[in-house]
Length: 262
Picture: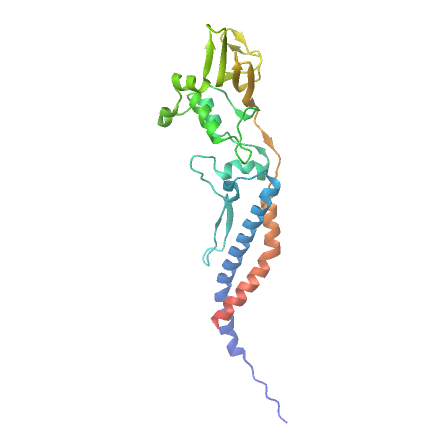
């Protein structure tokens, strides 16, 4: 009886070479699959931590995918939003906590000397389906207080359009004046002067309606810089998903790559 032992060492270098060639590709596939899973997991949390997140918020994440030559995948917030506030700016306080930057409308009001700083919604603010200040009323207020810049100056309200919005009836002959629409006005805070009268209202943009404008309520109130606590566990979620999923994604990607290379 003879036992024959033969070494297959001459085959090993080629197998190693094939393995090494597939590793960068498998790594890029695993990184991209994991990035997709991280993105989905963060989006899934948004309805739980935010009240009625807008479609734009739910679409606010993007991925820079990895390549064989660049083994890095990035899950980030979109940094452009047309005329609105970019997601990376308005969602950053929800990720890190702390203060937020001014909104465009706040900067516009400040630019024409209406109010400085930050504004929060008052009782007369009209809301959209997601609980945010309606775009229609924001535009109306910017127009009313001549806050559109040079490019949008034609959208600024005129005396006639302000009168149409007020829809005032009655007058001296009838003994009363009734605001059937709405008149907006500014209070710069209790104790401040408006003409010859001392203001008794907190700083903000207010509206008045009704007979002699006695129905008064705030639309936007001026506040100190708002401070937020962290609500969206962005990095914590990414670390958790990566720890749970990357190894499995890499193993399956490498198996598939080696199988296709045989």
